[in-house]
Image (cartoon, rainbow, N blue to C red; front, side, top):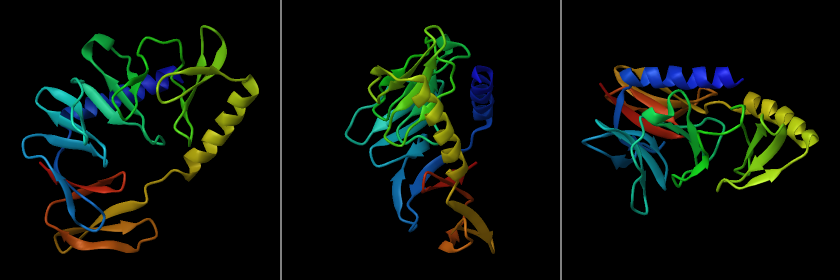
Length: 208
């Protein structure tokens, strides 16, 4: 599983070389909620953004301030507040951050990268060196758990994977772009002249 996770990171990082630019972000009603003219907005929420410029990726916080630069920084699927990040010094490894930019799991660790993200914003890991499962809160605090709970959480996680899906999709009509839900219902009539993508319930306008 460790190999698979690292391979996934490498594939995403390589695809970033050809990454598209997103300068404008809209809500599902078509209202512009954010614009960044001189950098690309890779992720948007009310309190945390990922911005990319010619130096790399960084967090920008709604309350002010920003993080250091990363060569790779992405929101993790199936998690509410967690991100994966890396710098050149980490090599093929990466670390897990929370939405405040704080390191929850450092890139030097004994875990197998087979992480479970719980609905209450915690992470469950298995320490390969200690042969012990741990629950880690959003600040990085480790709490030992039983093997039984670890196995139960693994089963629940598989069910969450089945339930996890994208609720909204872009569609094109007469040269304009709009939004439908997974049932095919039109959420936003075609109004965008540029192609769009929907990420975490926000619309990102693609700039080539």
